[in-house]
Length: 65
Image (cartoon, rainbow, N blue to C red):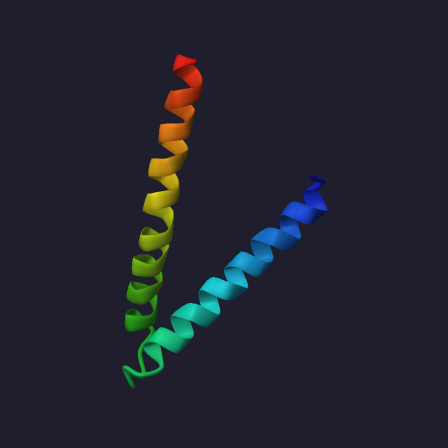
């Protein structure tokens, strides 16, 4: 993929995470940004950890082959 395609993909993922986080914190009804950032970190961890584990497992599998 070209770099512009990666840029589009990354921007769409970032926009999706922002929308997911805003909708999750909209029900908290707090005026500060701290709950938003806390929810963003939790969502990123829930998405990132499985991707990291699967990626690491795939890398180990390919390395041993």
